[in-house]
Image (cartoon, rainbow, N blue to C red; front, side, top):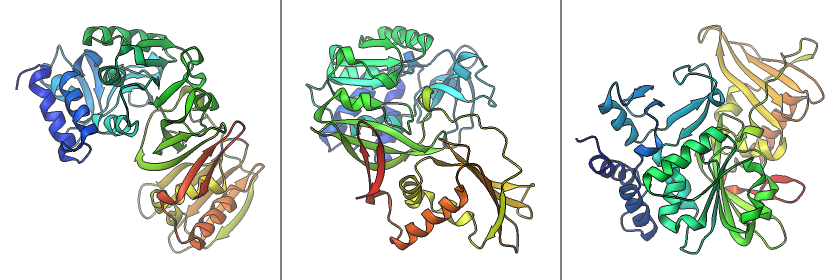
Length: 383
């Protein structure tokens, strides 16, 4: 297959159709299928980048000069491609450093674009320009004048601007804190967020017309997992939304997972008959939202086996995003769970209480919860 956009774009469209992301019989899907054909992806991928694993392809460095076939194959496959680590201070192949900019895998990107439910008159604000590829898709659909995109990283925004120009698009590219939105360009009909957030900036609600919407990756456990959240803005200054499919994104820089101090050694000790693996296994069945509703700032920092295998300990560590609370739950074979916790909140007791409440409610799933955003707070609750 030739190393060109024309030679490879149909494969990407075929993949998304086979995966059920796009339906050739659906009018909105038809627009995005055409966009995949007419908006090249390769101008938005640097000569050297890091390919995330996809299907039978392992993660690894891609270099257009050294191995053009591998580079082109990655660009037009359904994988995310990392273009920056450590805010530009680390090498792309240093996997010990978190990625800080990328071009999302087409599957996820197109799912979020479809959630916008765009119409020709819509004026869109995109939070997180990244490489510029989704800004190009939006410009293709709506026109350059109706798309504003903002990124906090000046070098990322500059590179995106050049890539957009190469691809034949010219939306307004701003440098700034996306949490503040773009008040000078408001109001917007749609806000398209390409980075994970836990706390919804109220400026996005203020800058969106009543009746229109914000589509955002909401990540209650920063840097771990999240949900596609579509928020409808109401005429009373609030927004209400539903949780849709799962997702995982790099966090908005101002909401990155904090660097916590070491766990304390003076906390209280106790035991419980609840195995921490039980609530952990229910996180993607609705319990993550139940926990967010019950204890909004409690996060599971780590969870998994330690001491090299099944004969060791399974350990869950909890932290508080707004205080100094911490907890450690240790499951050992044949024993009750050992709990240590300290700080200003008893985090394990909060998690155990949230889990029991979720069971009493009949294990409500993702569809049973709603997000409410107001000028002063946000809240996850059962519908």
